Image 1 (cartoon, helix red, strand yellow):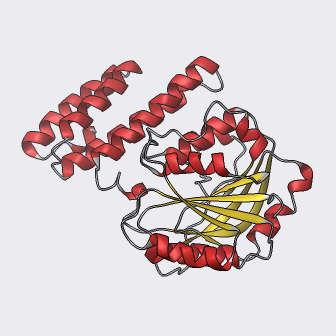
Image 2 (image 1 turned 135 degrees about the vertical axis):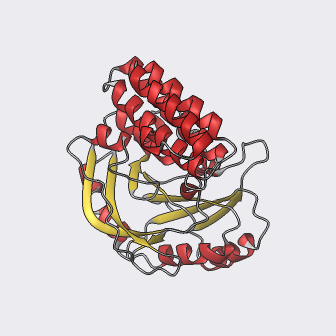
Length: 313
């Protein structure tokens, strides 16, 4: 078989109950020049059995297990899948995403313009694939500023990247980040000023369900919150050195996130509220927001004792 044009790379972990829908959506594509590389992160369910049925019917599917010497996690699986890929273009995908039937065909029509990146829109769907009324916002006149602050989002699945562009980068996915990993990856690639084509078409169904990592922040999962803080601080450091944009924009965003998480931790009397309090205080002091820092101290103290003073935060 000649080299495919598009390599679809899917990390998976215990998604046997969902991945068949994703693979069905790939098989149903009107565009046929693709390969699908599935990298298993150590599933203990029957994911391998489900995938083997697709491999038996279609040799464009490939199944690999993450090598034991590689770090556990989807980012490690994505990087490994990239090493195995043969396509001219790379489509990162998750094992619960759905490609609409003409998605790859619409994307492929733009290859003749040799873009480094093609970004499309998506539909938000629930666990039963009912389309939600939430609007995907991905277009902006100030991409970096709005991406920093979460006003626009590409996610993992909407971009299609030229492999030769990705091969020039120092590294792809940061395997030490578990939350905001797509935010981190997409921003680092955007810093390199890729040639971008935007398709204002809904080509993907993006499933929203409570167990996903993106909801761990709302549940005050300390590890995921630390990962978010780590990702944001990493990019503050990058833009301070590169002067791409004013780093205070991202520092202010970090402050807002710290304040939001502290408020929630106080209301829920979370055991890590002192950790979040110190984080917010540290950010405010680094921004020389001394009056805000004083309000934070007063508000935290009063609310901790009397369960009042919320507005000070």
